[in-house]
Image (cartoon, rainbow, N blue to C red; front, side):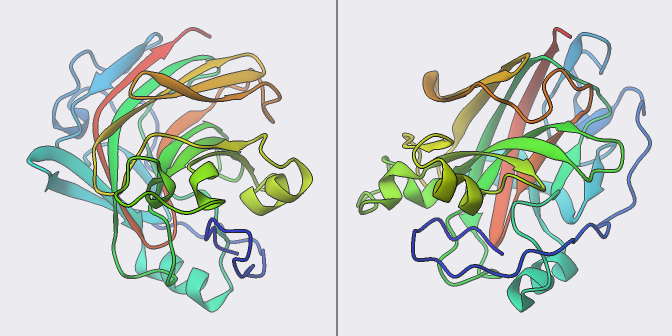
Amino acid sequence: MTDLSSSTAKAWPRRDFLQRGAALTAAGLGAGLLGACAHGPGNHGGRWALKNADGFAANLVNASASTFKERSAVMVELTPEAQKALLAGTGVGNGPSFIMPPLQLANGVIEVDLAARINGKGAPDVRGFVGLAFHIDDKAETFEAVYLRMTNGGKNNPPPPAPRNAFAVQYISFPDRYWRKLRQEHPNVYEKAAPVAIEIWHKLRLEIAGSTVNAFVDGEKVLTVSDLRFPNRQGRIGLWVDDGTAGYFSDLKVKVTG
């Protein structure tokens, strides 16, 4: 199953797909993370310039130093094995595909600049899936996420047709509340329109408190979810991508409030 972001999209079989893209790095790796961690990770959060991928744990993805639109960034995309499995129908979309800083968060604020490019390796009509995961368990087997479908955003020229234009930001939890299930059972609740575009930098901010997450794009609130699957669960956070997408991330800021 891959998220093709249209009501007529083909549904791939949904199966367990939790092989590691790279060995999970132990938490608490100290300073020097991603080239420029201004404060270092700690009990209250941290800030990373994201000039390289040193020190982050990777799961089902490869990450490397890159430059996008004249900005230094970390590029994240599915490993060849994970991408191949999605196309073969033996993998699972909306999965645990992210890099993670050595930091735990139950409640707080996560903010990052991000952009997406279609890398030509995925399904024919991928949408540029990039976002933030949180409440990731120790084995990277369960988590929650808010992500953007960049080609569905209202800032594309020309804008996407209906109903795609209403499917630009999405909440999921893995493995039981993936995009198609949420769309079918709760239409227009866990996904909304958003002012984004493919190959453009945007700032995504998540404010997580108890059972609620509020998502903002470039300062504008675009989604509120008030029934989080894992409220108040201490867990890792992740810079998340999915099928056929090269995600670019810069200037990660995390404030831990609980």
